[in-house]
Image (cartoon, rainbow, N blue to C red; front, side, top):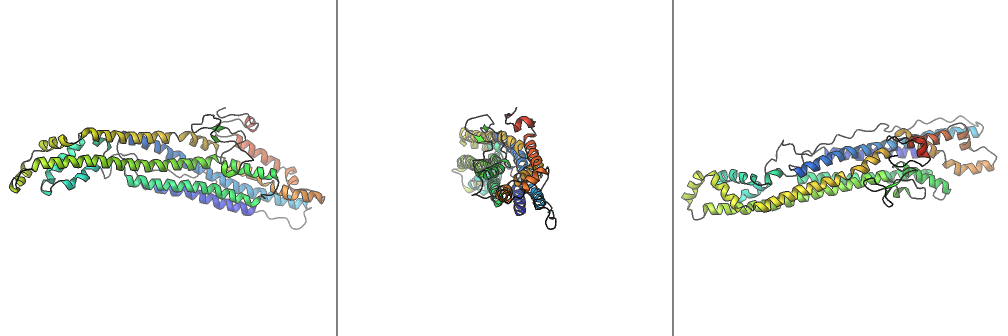
Length: 439
């Protein structure tokens, strides 16, 4: 049990590192979404997720720490009870100090905003960089300003500058790493708890182990089944503790962390692709228009006339010529599709919020999980040794533990702490299984 507490402690620090690694990468970037009303909507939705996701992760880290402390506490009490059961034979046991853990909710944020605020570099249209190679050097100083102006006359300016695809993809990679880290945290916790279990042991004990590994990730005895918007449904996410289900198949908080990270990763990669596809389309339109403009202005002129043209060409004439060749309708259509893609991505991210909110409310506190771990830890020796002691006519140390006031009070404390969640559910009704969500 002492060893298990230390393994859980180490797992807590690893779990903490996963969130810190994510935030460190995300804070390497800012203004990455670029300009546009769709990009602004996406930035706002992404900012909200970047507030809720680290909060959920931080609270789950603290829960794991409570487990390590609770297991140590109950082991100390068990060893003491065992010593008393042996009629205090031998020297009194030395109480071990609980492992040093993260007891207070870490602050992982804030995370940089990716909304374009009009500062810094890259304020030019991506299209202008694509057309420069089509302008003769001796005309570049004259034609470039006119073409830049021509590009601003349509909708192109609405998404200038565009999203930074390399930064979006780098952030997506960080979210993918967070997805894997969340799953590893749960897997490692389940493995650690198995050190104090016997897969061939008492069915009641195995059920208790499964229940314990589920409740740390948000399940309750009165949990329900909800869809992603937290509406009651017959088939959806299961929040109810089930002693017959393997812990890896009933861990809503971890599943939400994983699925949120996966959704954001896929969304960021998609938007990077949208950015590149839009840039390719609009740049090609600008290149075609530039070629036609240069051809109209220079066809049939000798070198002397071309030189004179560069000095006398009217700005307005170049703009009009360029616009006459630019497929404005096609460019505007591409811009609108760009806006819409970012807006739809914002809607997708906003759809993740209800489950994140519920998960934040469902994470056990440090004290609650410490108490639950103490109650949980008081049982394995009872199944493994209690029968042998009874057969030998000796008192069961777990019974001594309960009679001394440690065991039963711990169980009741765990029940009350889990029931009295921050959204105001009543403890007595919750423990009785009569409270529904929002009741």
